[in-house]
Length: 215
Length: 380
Ligand code: SF4
Ligand code: SF4
Ligand code: SF4
Image (cartoon, rainbow over all chains, first blue to last red; front, side, top):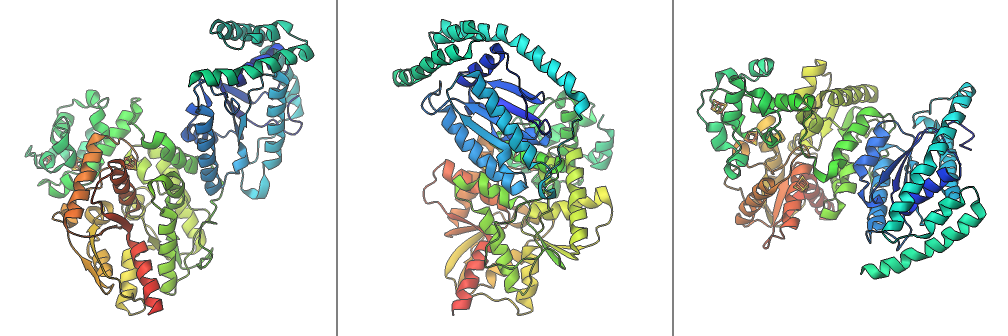
């Protein structure tokens, strides 16, 4: 379920490797998150520029999440590290501009568990809801009336319904390149999170080996 | 399409003499680029095709051509009109630094929120309301973006406040300040520029300030020359920090200690050709005992631009201009190149670092040099 208080607008830049697999799995598992969350898949978290993040805030989003692969697991060797630098610089600039730096969150994780991904978004939404209206510094989030809820729920369901197809496609693609073979299993497992997450845990181990091969 | 611009910039008086192109530092390095031909093409109604060309974004808006044009064609405004037209047709220049500075300016134009001013050094005195306001501009932001160049723009803001304090003035540093809109104005983003201008004027009104002091010539030029065109008469006095300090040196309130060194001075386009402030920075440097000013061959209205402007388009051409200026500065035998514009400081330092120039000259900001001399003065 999305954040209880309000429905903050979150723009999530999601790396197309591990984190996007987590997002896809969330869909495959039929999980839902805030309807005001937009996911922008990116080739690598390293391509997200400070300008892109600041522009998001110019367009009145409440928070920006960047989901990157965990340490040592970047498919392009150091995209997640350069992303960390960009995030630090952007946070400094945000602070100077009077925007709470907590509005920009970086998640470094190679966990492809859909539940974790949704929990991450929900937790961020709760934090953002808490920030709004603070000390008159921030623009208050537009209040969303309870009346809108049914629409929200059905939209979330629609998204969830659409996702498995996409997830499968992504899985096939990734299998074809010889990576994360267990992804297929986890998608096939569909609504059996317990079993799936074990398979995913195994999958998580792989990237380390990959990183070695790269050099 | 360009009729209004042609009328306002007096382009129809163009004699086709080519003095502009002959004066232009960009044309010298890039034969494709010619202000004269651009004016001609606009007069011949060829403006539509012109808008998509990259030359629209090549001008430094340094004002050298306009300063020399026998018909006083305002080529800067002409460039701006082209850029507005280009943007409206969907063409953009290439933002430098991956657009981070432009994104910041747009953010300041669009969002509410108050700036954090905790960068002000603890030993300095500032206030939230008062008669004199120090407009800090983008200095705090540049401190984050350009720290890798070793350019300390926050230090520049602090040394400006330190000097004002030494004059017995406790300036207002406002949390409601915004970017002055200079770069958005010159790259053709009218709407964001106007938003910023309105916010700044409201901020100054609320601060109760009667005088606004600028450390950045771009902000100063915007407030004194451009804002009035859009908002009418400005109800407060404006001055560059060099003008402010000179008046205090003259009245004997401010004096400096001994500082042995040989320096040269870069006239910023905005402070010099735009605003005609040539003597005050020199007078200040001259008032520091032991400081010797060695002039470069091209100074005052003839000064060579620092090579880049408005955070759009920084190419081989721009770098070459910067290196040319740096070697001119080094040839004076000076150990320090003093600038009174934070951006000259940034761009020239960038070129020095980028090209790893040997026999390099140190690049310092005017208020940093003066505030150092101030410390010497208190000691003696
Ligand atoms: S200097 Fe002036 S008159 Fe001469 S070509 Fe350029 S714009 Fe025309
Ligand atoms: S303003 Fe400067 S850069 Fe632009 S055309 Fe004139 S001389 Fe060249
Ligand atoms: S000279 Fe350096 S700092 Fe200036 S715009 Fe070019 S790259 Fe940026």
